[in-house]
Figure 1: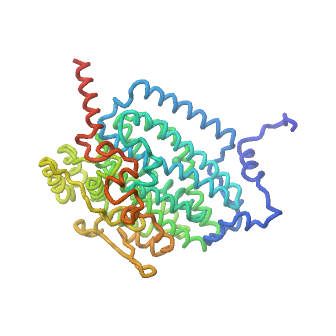
Figure 2: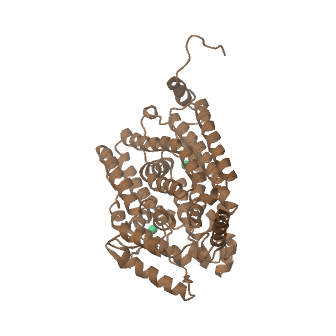
Figure 3: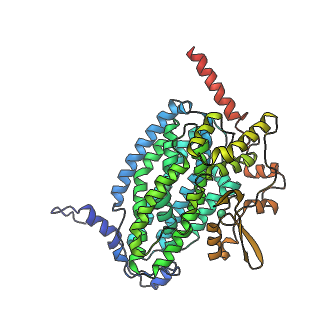
Length: 507
Ligand code: FE
Ligand code: ZN
């Protein structure tokens, strides 16, 4: 090809050649056979050329930017390892938040890479295909950088040794896993509404800001660095999220009710998944950043309301159950921490009763509920533990058929009564933690009756055997090492040894 010396093409022109010029109309096979999935959800697209490209990056520019970020990230990871960065964290209890992230969130980055690759193949529009392809590559990078950053802790702390295996099997990890499996098995437009819009645009700040500022506050520079390295990617992903919603809504008004139902559904699914983050913020960070309640108010109630005001001109309303989290925000984290305190003998991380300073912080953040409902419970558990009876619940809980979380949430208007709902389908009864989860099931029962519910699977003998020991072995969890109370754990002993060594060296 002759080099055009007269004029170098601008990035805009090169991008439009990439996203439009490389497309073609099929001739051997009809379009609907080549793209079988982008019609059956009922979304009507009249003109793919109206797709606004959110990334506007050519491949060469993309690889250049990403390579630069990688160089910086790996330099920081190296120096973190060489300077024994793990000694700089606030307390070894902090690492339990990292264990949840590595086993519950990082595998979702990989799932996102798979999901966007699949979806990228199945859109009729070239611009959408390229955007999905690029996001798929980002997500693959995210899982890799997270594993590389956090693997340093695996040299010293327990529970980080088998995240892929655990993600597929361990009971509480079926919550994030089923969330993403649900999205990946939906149609392509629903996938983008679920992941790009509801998760990346509406709720992402409630996942990444708490984890990243939690890491910064607690001396975990490895995690902070991968967070920064992913930030510019996240900005592009959020643009795609909003872009795809507006595109669907502008193409045809018959799309509006379909999109509204997806927003209702994925808002609720995302919110239930974030209850893990609520617990992490209020209980697992030795140095707190803000409470879950404050985060919900800032990142959803304030930011979300103005977003939905903007979408109002298309006829889109706030998600159906948006007011329930406002009622639950004073108790969500306490309820979830209590579930894990009950079952930490079957988990790959430790739990503990908060100490007096922490209880005072919780009371200051939750003045209406903490001392009234939760402090007495912790005082009781502490007394039991002091008497040599640390409580571990030996009965398996009932799970919600939709979100798969044990039924430990309370009625929106009564924090002393467990909330439970049920539906009949083909003569069977299914149970739910909330109206939000029941509503999702009732809309697609054929999908959710297939849920792989860990408790049912254990009872059916599909998880290694009938005893807790059998199941832990099947999880590849090291007994009395990865699980049980933090107090007396190998993590705690090692950490205290380091502190003693340090004090000795300083004196
Ligand atoms: Fe990601
Ligand atoms: Zn549920």
